[in-house]
Amino acid sequence: MRLIALVAVITIAGPAAAQVADARRFQLERTENGIVRLDTRTGAMSLCQDREGSLICRMAADERAAYEEQLDRLEKRVKALEDKAGATGLSSSGENLPSDAEVDRSIGIMERFMRAFFGLVREFESEDRAESSPPPRTN
Image (cartoon, rainbow, N blue to C red; front, top):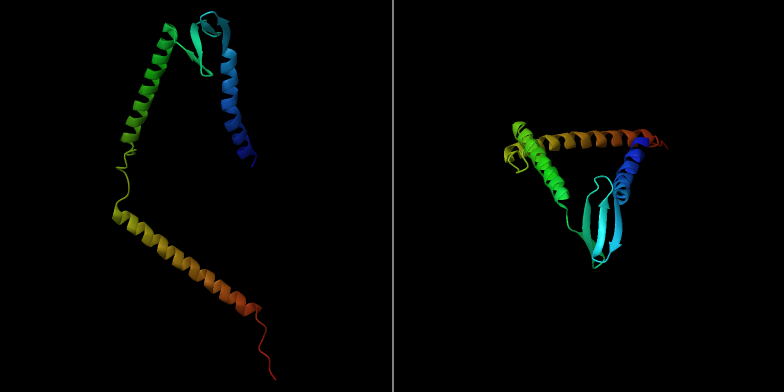
């Protein structure tokens, strides 16, 4: 139970902590032409505009390069995962779904299991009723 609570706290707090860290990462300064955003980690500056309550920033050249680099890394990672899934016989396209015969066989096994199980339940219920019923009266 503690593990579930810990996972729930991490799941909820993780994104919030990341947002706080990002909020501290950037420093904003209003100018005549808009807002200048300073990335306190990299020192990169971007010119931003306030449009309908949203801050729209143009990416600086180094931010664009970092973005493209991260995108390339993610694309390579996805490709590697797809290749690994293909090598293990897994596919996201549905190619590895069981055939109708396999599904029918599985359903047949489950049906036999359920019939046997409920047969045992009925047997126990009848034994229980027999034990709890009062003995017949003699007059």
